[in-house]
Amino acid sequence: MVEDLRHKERSDALQAFGKWLKKENLGKLKKSSFTLNEDAGYGKHFVGRYAKFHQLAEELSAMTADDYLHCFRDICNLTADLKKSVVDEDDDYVFLAGTTLLTMDEFLRFAAPAMNYHIGSICKYHQ
Image 1 (cartoon, rainbow, N blue to C red):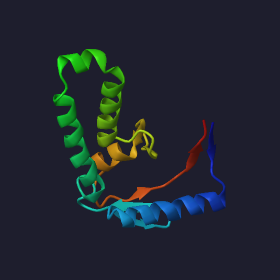
Image 2: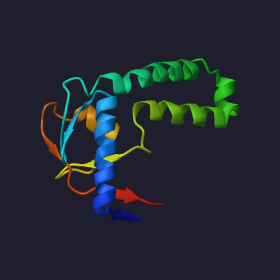
Image 3: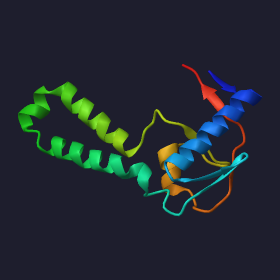
Image 4: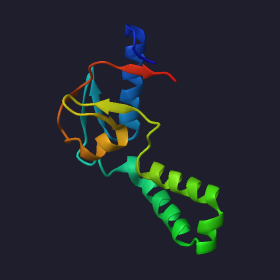
């Protein structure tokens, strides 16, 4: 179920988003609009995950044919972790007018730095 947030919840969500932008050195929030820094798509936010991506890729490349055939769970876990090091699908999503939902990671990689993005609705997703 998806629901729009009430005023206080919206205000709290915006405040948390602003703190996150600042902590990750990604950009600045002003009221309900934000701009991203020039290096948001390749900065601090992705550094640790890039190292993890390489570590997991090395682990996968070290697997033998026997591992591949008989270690199903290990392979599934490693490939899931590898994908999560590229894009965290459990994170927040962004909907840009005329597009589909983008994960926050995808948005950060493709968003235009210094462009002003207005935050319209904020929704909470419940399973």
